[in-house]
Image (cartoon, rainbow, N blue to C red; front, side, top):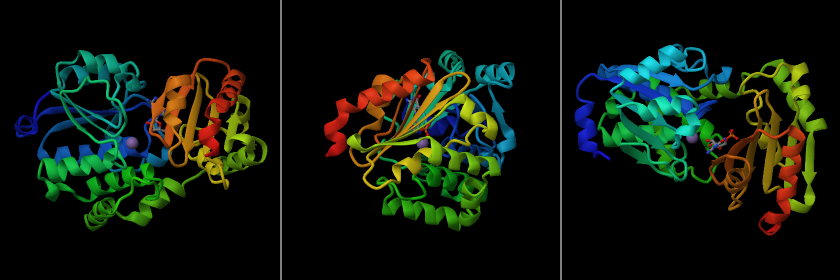
Length: 336
Ligand code: 5GP
Ligand code: MN
């Protein structure tokens, strides 16, 4: 591990820098990555953002999104960039398995690895970390890193502010989760002062659906929602066949799980979707119920207590049945 003074010294000269984030990046992953990118380029660094996979269309408007390299589309270029990097920033994840094949490239690289993250249980591949599980988002930590650790508040320009606002907004459920503090609102106020157009960001992320996506949501709620009243649990499960008529793209299923959680009395909500490679689970919970424990124990995943995810190679039907069979184990907590 190195200390902040050493990192500051490294950053005093223009460096070759890679920023990477977890696969299937969400608003916080891309917002924090491009927020940091838009800061570092002002300091004269040569910076590339590498995403392990593609990501939702409603994040493609982020400032300098065109500079992002997608590993699965440009493997050789990505590997070369990682091999040549002097510093690698790893944002919004803390285990190299979260960046797929890119993980081994990063592990084998001689670059200095800086992890900025808010998830539990870091694996420990990093040389410097800014890590706080109580942070609302990685974007909040990037703000803290730039403003308080590096003392560079004056570099929070409109592009940086726009990206960080997006990360905070999406990971805090639009400023409504328990990790939203008065201090976070002060940060957000600062970002608006720096040029983040809050109303436009909300519109671009949330009011940007295709007609198909909205019709698919209607289908899910009418035909695929199961309320398991004995366990205060609601489940929406969709098969590959269900997705087909609506031509559902990356990211278009995001947020559907929250409709299941919005039912009065529900403590645990699940969204299970059969993708071409794997069956993916998204869990959301209320209060102290540990959604991440279920994901870690049964579905090769993890995340936060109230928002977690996982995946399985088993069949769609098996995963749905397995999820239901786990609930009795948690009955006491779910009914508390
Ligand atoms: P989502 O349901 O939106 O895919 O994920 C919710 C949260 O769980 C996110 O904070 C994400 O980082 C985490 N998460 C999702 N999938 C996985 C996974 O496979 N492994 C781990 N460790 N965390 C995950
Ligand atoms: Mn995050």
